[in-house]
Image 1 (cartoon, rainbow, N blue to C red):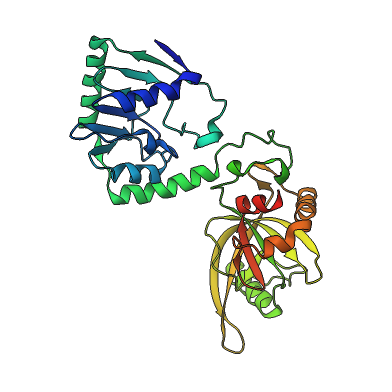
Image 2 (image 1 turned 90 degrees about the horizontal axis):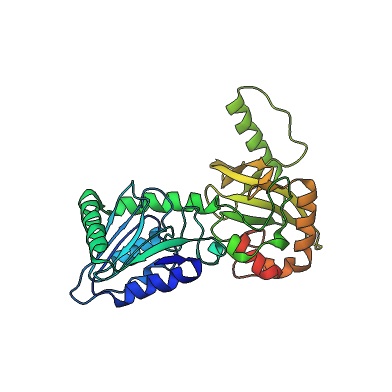
Length: 331
């Protein structure tokens, strides 16, 4: 029987719920996929995924590993999507919630999937032989595999395709984006009330000169550096916003974290600087002066709520907030 997108989820759930034994060789597993699998009392549940690709959500794999009676392996060359019981089997195009583009949940809406459902004993027997051979070729999942998978998953989720904004050169516009498209992007809004101190500016200039091996003129404008901030997320992107004591809101563009370094003030107190680089794109879309100005205008009416939000991390001088959490406040 040919199965289309509208029937796919129903068929997957029915096989999982009705079959005494369950075998799945599905390359990529995403959010909620662990809920599909129902442990059997004394019956086999064997699952194979492709964890090393970075397209499988490691949190789901951890949840599956913790289920009693569920055996789980990984295979770096797996790209198949096969679900098998003792009476039925489904061979199709759909991963479990994630499709290799690191989309999850409602992000998958509109994708066209198809599969073949069979209850032919000969075909089921052939599929079972294929699965058993693949199971022998696959390997166990260790803790270090999960650690590496989490790093890969985070990077791929942050770079997943954005399906709402048209392709470049469309400028970035937060008001057009849903929260689901903003989560896991590794993008934060850095909001501050104090400018970089003269001493920190000089320290950073000396640091630049040491790296460049030559004297550098003093910066007319503050460089892309944050002074004594709470520990900012590593390898993240920041939309830089100044929030004045009289309510002024100015956005100075987008930055990406590079590195931190520590120094001592003249009085001996320790300080640290977070060094960034300027970016022209946010989520693959232009973020220039026009987009920065529009972002500030969009943020201005809500800045007090954002500054006082429990989602904002920091102190009375500087805070940062995940772009997805910010969008909740602005709507």
